[in-house]
Length: 272
Image (cartoon, rainbow, N blue to C red; front, side, top):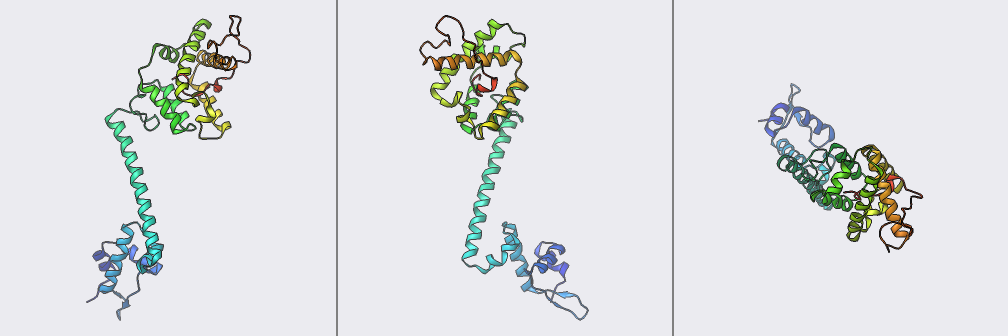
């Protein structure tokens, strides 16, 4: 007893198109034909077709099936490579599931970088966009430091900075810069790259600075940018003075404003 192509496909749980494709690739031997011209498949074709189906279900590419069925040394290499690829895919999918769980169960924001959880989900939209931009250029270590900053309760100074109006007076800007400088000094004791954009970056310096500059200018107003300029001036002056007085003054009781830097020279995380 023999079967037609349609019957063979049905028995093997595949399609007519697949059977014809396997014939074309030489994976499945052509059967004898009846005097009427119809193909006549037997159990050997069924067994072969079931074998092809099993390998394709395991993810073996059609081009590798002849080698795998030959059961030589090369077939073992192919299967090991396939197993490694499947393991990587499983890990990637598990990572995706963890992120989805954080969104569905913990209330994490879809807009924030992975692993930020719900800690920063209530941030203003501009601040969330800033974090997304940073994640494109900063190392995972740098992003984890920033994430840890947002998991802590926001102090009054950070809160004031985030909601600082564009027309904030100069004395307020300087006061905030001084307070933030103290915070940066504390952070820098544990994380030396906190004020070193090159150390915090996973891209080339020019590209990283372009992203950080655009992000700061886009998502912070002029008063906030001015605070960052004052902050950087304080830190630079402190380094120039050898950290002796720590207040960024020139020794005459006046703030030194010469060479106030662009906002992008203050690294991300300095105001977290």
